[in-house]
Image (cartoon, rainbow, N blue to C red; front, side, top):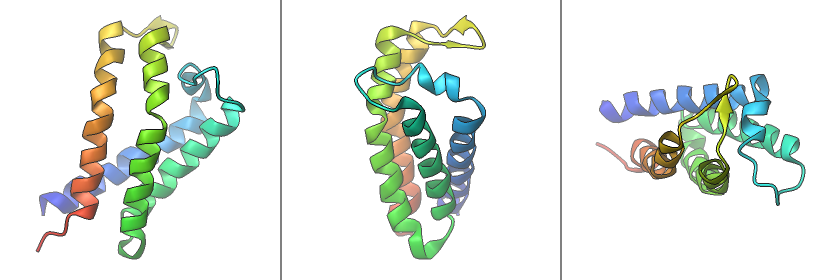
Length: 124
């Protein structure tokens, strides 16, 4: 039962996060490593991937593929979190404390485990 609830919360988290890529793209532009081309397009692609992954974990026939997709996405966007920790970023014109940006780094691994535990481990 907790696995199902955490999976549903996970789905809402990723769907809302994905939608936010389209509602507040400038927030994500700050995270983009400068060596990556087409930052706006990559933000849109990652937003679509988060929405699709969030919906996919709710649908049993594609849950495993969606979960692995979200795990790969979390790994792929990790350089953006490193970029934010190094360069800093702001939200609504106010700088985010460096400590918060550093704490985001291990949070990525918590999210990966959350996806793994709630979607890929079979509970009977």
